[in-house]
Amino acid sequence: MPSLKDLQGIIQGQQGGAQKPAAPTTLGAQPTDLGCPLEVEVSEEFRGAVPSGWQSWSSEANLPPAERKRKLASISFYDGTPAGQNNRAPVRERKTLEGKRVDWSFGPGTTWLACRYEDSRWTLIKPLARGVRRCEATYTPEGRPTQLNCR
Image 1 (cartoon, rainbow, N blue to C red):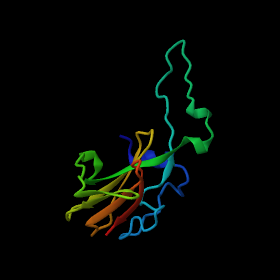
Image 2 (image 1 turned 60 degrees about the vertical axis):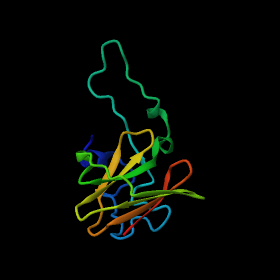
Image 3 (image 1 turned 180 degrees about the vertical axis):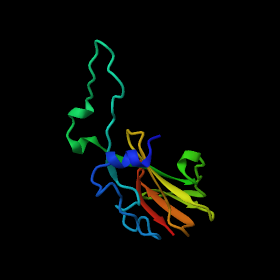
Image 4 (image 1 turned 30 degrees about the horizontal axis):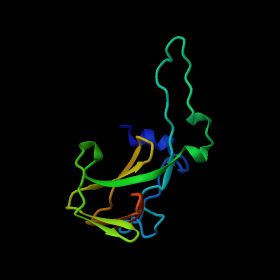
């Protein structure tokens, strides 16, 4: 998994490589503000020497930047950093007319938010603000997150 420093150099639209932090008690008061960027532009690189007799080519390299962007696909929470792979299971899921709502509860330790993007292995991660004990996410019927409220 790439480091956050590696990822900062690839994510487009950031000032000085730093993401503006969300407010500590509302990671998503607006449907368009999930605490996760709604889309990121990532790049896949060919590493190492191209084998003799071959050339490297990427169909993605020929796409305009808007088509290289990856939309937010999912969110999840971890007890500690995601590298420890201690994924938090939701405490409740319920269907709604708009899709579904999912609730998580957290203990006193550090909980991390992970934002995953479609057609990409990249994940953005950050710890939740101190004192956040609950989050509720709203999803479309297709399963795309649309809102995240934490307190």
